Length: 182
Image (cartoon, rainbow, N blue to C red; front, side):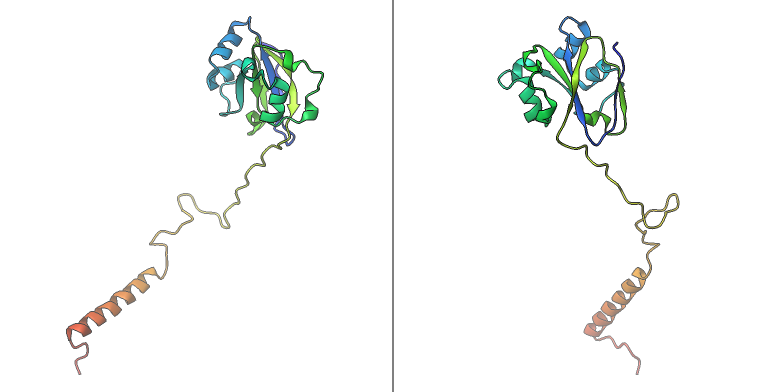
């Protein structure tokens, strides 16, 4: 294994790019069967969020080139990719680790020996702001729900009773039943 790589949870995200060594057996397995479990194991993690890493076969994007692929398909800022980089000269496969891998907090990667870090490239899209769910206006006791049950509601039974009485009076009046004894 190589040195650990810490990916912080950040508002200025960057994707990490690894080249897969075609001579390494684990890297070959990753290139041939890039499942989430195999990618996580290659990064030394028990699991990863879905869609937070992907393996790209460079032959599939050769018409575009890796540099333009990062800029156009992964929102990497053009300034982050040095035009002098030799990214377009690479062959084989690369592993792209998206900033979303650290959406729930910093992550420490322990990449296998067949993964060679090419760099971290800033993306133009800021990290999503965590959703803030407001606290309820009043705390609820354990087992108590914020939506009142029928027993907790007040007045609902009274309205129903009045409605039943009005309908009964109308029905009895239509049938000709005297309602008052006088």
